[in-house]
Length: 332
Ligand code: FAQ
Image (cartoon, rainbow, N blue to C red; front, side, top):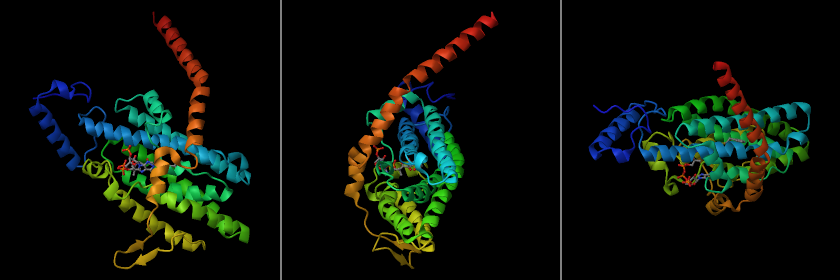
């Protein structure tokens, strides 16, 4: 019998084809039984790599996602709004940290992940390359961006890789607070003066389509979906989640008297959901490839933060070394 204790203890190169096949079959059977795969379990190299790709990109999105809203903390219109926004932005940083830690269990270091982000090798969500130009945008980000993030992430609570699934359970709880605070900001503006309502509508107009793009390309153009569905990394496809978001969000807009900026939006009785207009996929790919309104600004902010924080990292490491030395001396 073949005993495997760690994903890294026996590399595929050292195994015979028959051994690998048997491990793969056992792995697929575990996925079929809806068992969670844990970091020390054997897994196909492609499973490990695709998780590192998606999870690290997810972590980068959380951290880059702090920037558009962070920019509004000092300008929030009241102390209450400031406190809530500050807490929300901190939460997003925390989500990034859980996700980086969960990704590290797959054998990549945090420094490697940062390097991939800073050199443009790794992606982060397209949505954060759009600017937050008015206070109403902070409402729209909470309502729509966090709303879309939750729909995606509730599905990921059932993902097959244990550390990712567990991180998602906690993150979803916090995201639902974020979505509500965003909807409440938008609601208050929609019930305010005509100028305030116009601001809320303008924010919805600018954030609606980019929010739909968050779910990724249409299923037919999504190279990763088929395999990720088989491995239960994804539990729903990009289009299924996008449809769920539209069906959930349209009544929320109607309730507060705002109009979704899509002339083709129409309830389809037969499918029990809305039909909607075509997404501008050229715009989506332009933003993904680095040519969105704020891509350069966002990367510059992250790289500066990394470089300016070097002395903090060095000091923390020197402190940890000294503590360790002291402990070792005391033990002698
Ligand atoms: N932006 O084959 P697929 C949040 C890339 S968290 C940029 O369909 P996949 C919280 C994709 O990476 C938001 N790139 O890929 C918050 C792939 O390129 P690659 C982040 C995108 O992975 C709120 C290529 O296109 N959430 O918002 C995008 O199967 C407020 C082909 O696409 C997550 O990351 C995009 N929108 O499906 C924080 C959730 N879409 O890697 C602050 C986890 C696709 O092959 C404030 N991720 N691409 O070079 C996922 O569910 C999936 O990765 C998808 C993409 C659905 C995003």
